[in-house]
Length: 124
Image (tube, rainbow, N blue to C red; front, side, top):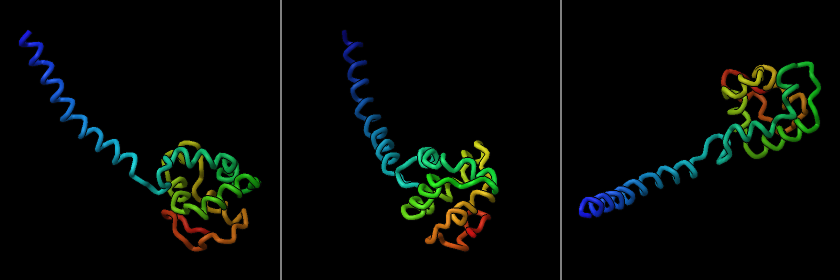
């Protein structure tokens, strides 16, 4: 019974040592904010699915739903829009950044920061 008590004590000590370290890491991850705030870039990008045709083809019609989403993102988090555009996820789904950067102009978004850089691309 002595070894069981020793093992139990070691387990309890381990939990009290490991748990706070793990908890700190968890809290740091939750509080961390990237270009899209606390929203993961994948989730932010998913909100822009109405734009998929327009970001792949410069001649494609930009839908009202796309313009609405892009306009809202410009108002709330323009850095997030740029981060999405330059993300590996964008490349995976076939987004052409040179075309995607034109969407705000094609939507006639008035408050777009003309001349602002997004990576190597400049907002028209």
